[in-house]
Length: 409
Image (cartoon, rainbow, N blue to C red; front, side, top):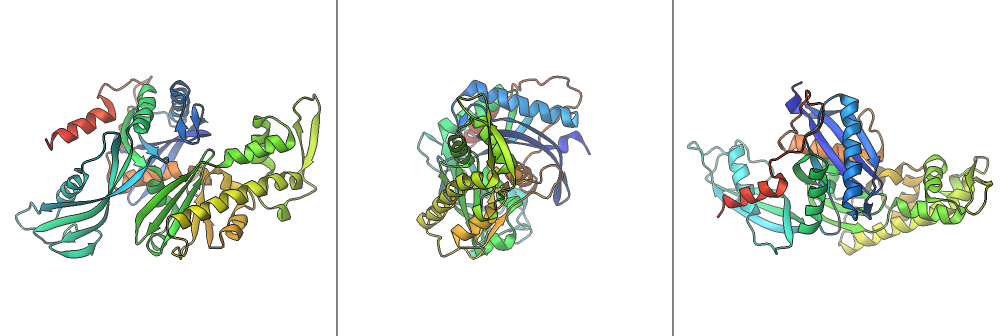
């Protein structure tokens, strides 16, 4: 496959930063490389230290480059956070072809029209997503390509974010020596891997329980209806373990990954482990049951907050497909059973079906690649001959946005 056909995603999370390299193969993708690094410089999903975040991004990219033996010059960057907002928008254009057949160019023009709205100066457009197309007054059309018509309209929503938050993400990526090929809303990208078409249509809550925050996103009638952030995630479980076992946060994280069980009733009193106790030179022995008595209450609290957030968004009784959960904490044994009990609804854990990334924590990164491939975004250019990464001089994401806006002046 030509080097231009590779797609790279960058998932900047609180605990981990992951760079994933994929290649489109017809209607699917193959994951061919993964690089990861500890998420230094982030708290609750937000960047709090530029320099540490840049170093973590460089480490993840270098890891992915060494695995595949290619040079990465740009990446699709996932973005989320409580600054994300959805705005309804409308666009209309005349079909340009002489035979009145609607083409990809017409669809692109009408989506661009939907982007041209007045926004506060502190807001920035991340993406525009079509809810439905209207051809000569006929509504409910999801893909008008090849249809005949004179007037093409789109009912869409604009995904906007804080200009400051976006600027900080873009600056970190560009200082790490990469060009931002595009920003992608992570819940929207994750849905391409985590959800089926039926779940999207019937109504489902996609829940990403990350290290520093939990993202709750509602899909119904095939489109994203709303998203919200809960400032609590897997790091709170780690913190509780550190306090309960009186050990360091690093040791608590290792214990959580190796021995945690989310349900006390399923935990074993025969599985034991030792942890270094703070203020002592001796290790203390605990059982998995002891650990579960710490983990279960915090996990229950997270799921209770998810349920309250869904109620606040107005979908408590309108989710026939239930909940689909992902994120690193959902790999904890018993997490799915506890979630089903607390949420009182069908629960499924999303896991990417690709070799090397079969873990709930990889859904965002793999989903970003799938989203870029399926929506026809420009593939990430590769340079297999370059021995070192060079910082691009193209001006970055904001230059491209300003150039695009200039066309409408």
